[in-house]
Image (cartoon, rainbow, N blue to C red; front, top):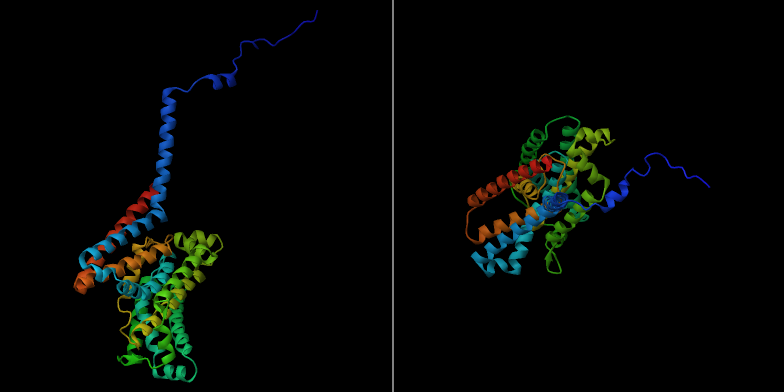
Length: 365
């Protein structure tokens, strides 16, 4: 007769797996799990609304409200196709400058000289010598001159800010004064009429009924979105603006990248100068006056942090459209420019306050 040996206490030891599988959760446990699930769902919703989707949705709502006010106060004059094209044409020049400004601000800088660079580029591209050369060769000479002037001014800003360690606010303020003064010297404070027919024909043309200026703005916006969201340059811009020291430790040449950002906004100013010349058929040292404020305001309204490290091209485009539509509503209601300036100032302050609140909430979470 065989003898079956078992270890002492084997029958007394509880089967923990069986206990876990058979013991039903208590009511408190269920409540805790439900609360955790609801909290997680709420956090996901809050995160979605505090992200780019939520910010852009708020901009769309704001734009729709302004449109409703426009229709309610001016009727068909606001809702007509011609007026919509007028809004877009007005927005196009500021929009191109704002796209470049978005990159600079995301990168942690700012550029107050965009209006003066635009004026200098418009004057230089419409001098008698430049137009004579364009008439003898090709109107693209004027395009090359405007882009070269804009790029050169941006390069000067970038080099002195990145390598000279001059504060962006001071450097671009100095460029503002210098470029505007040089434009007045070159033009002798006179308006220069464009006589090159090829240039005028191109920049006053329509494509399927849409002004070429609006098409240029659309192309620049799409190009800016791709550059910011789908390229190494864009990712480095976000990194440099978020934390320059961390970006440097990650192997990014922060100085060179900062310089390139100012060259980029300078080229945008050159393009905007060409659009200004095309719209007015003139070059003048007064072109682009205070456009830097409109550009910065549009970028801030669009959700780009003034401290850098975050921003979207889509938000900037909405910011430009909001300001252009608002100005149009004011004009149709016979409101003067002073009233418009007060309204814009209030909007900027509200936008910055909302940014600070959102930044604190993001930091706390």
